Image (cartoon, rainbow, N blue to C red; front, side, top):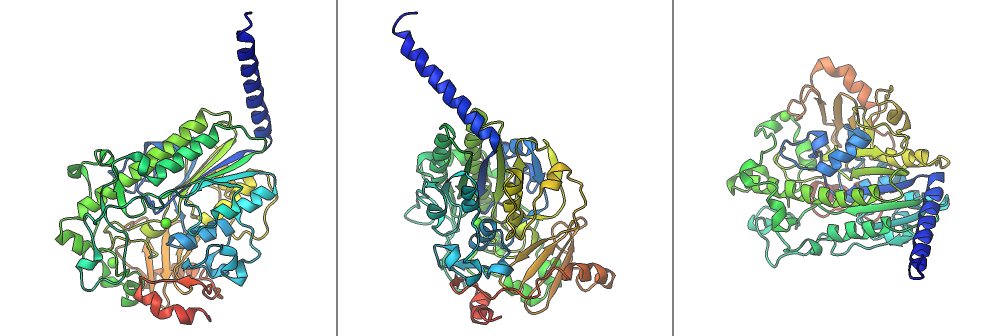
Length: 489
Ligand SMILES: [Ca+2]
Ligand SMILES: [Ca+2]
């Protein structure tokens, strides 16, 4: 062998040994790849929420594991949904029902002071924790992960002027919104999600002595619905289909329900029909989904090609859903199905491939599930439950509904078949989600469903925690008028 080749051979051997060492370490406990998507509703191919969506990478992941097709957030807004995920506690236990003006969840309420945040729990049991992008709503990711790659340009660069929607055009609109849509910026590299994916890809190419917990938080399809122009080519306007909308849908729901779900700065369907913008808004949301799916694909591909491919649990989720015109609204912040239903996929070593689970589950179940799958001691503070039995058999008896709170006094209970909701003023809704997936016919006053309603009503928390002191809500008149009352429930 010539002398020049010896150092090359040595280098290769060292690399091989490092790779084998990484594999040996990571086989003791599985790694975790935790992919969070912001404001993605059930418009992913595998969930069949919208016929025109294009999500090949998320669909591919669903084929590798278990798709939870009846999974729901615990609060229909970023901050409280994520607070529930990372504390493992219900909003009714922490008082975090709304956005919190605080960078650290633990200092926002006496009830969260002693909680174990998910990454801290993994760190305590020997994991290296890393994160990039949007995980918590506030800025505390840098504190609770060993390594944090940042949030880059947050929701991305913005054009000088809005393209298609400005609440200031309407006299009756209150507050500001980032809701707008169009082709912007020019380059993928200027997008936050591009940089987050890139950071995660680099991390997956490195060697680790400990098992890792890598969290990647993508910000699209959160508003503004901007992506570079080429991504709009995936959804030509003439192919875009509109979601179902019934103009007289609100005739059978109490006025109080409409008030809770009214976000006055957001566009209404009637407004966008008048401006000929509904289809364009849907096109932009679909485009943002395809954009994010592509970023997810880059991370999944890198994992597949890494030494960690066979020993990493992948968990993909979104923090809540979104309406794109269905209930005369383009918003989150309500407790109908499209606001609460989210993609939730779990794959990994020992998890059966290509399974579809219709049992109701919540994002709150992710924390105890990961602890269970990684063989860590159960955290007795967790209020969710491990989905282990459903990963084993998707038809296992599962009698627990998913509970979503919007403020401390509006709760929605999703069982396998029904959605029951009770609002602050005592008004109610009941929908048969099999017969009526669009929630058009409110059955709450139909005597035939008295027993069903009673069964669901018992899951409404009796003593919800008062609102966390640093809670804020500046865009919904109903919430503004109630905030002070809710601080002393
Ligand atoms: Ca969100
Ligand atoms: Ca209706």
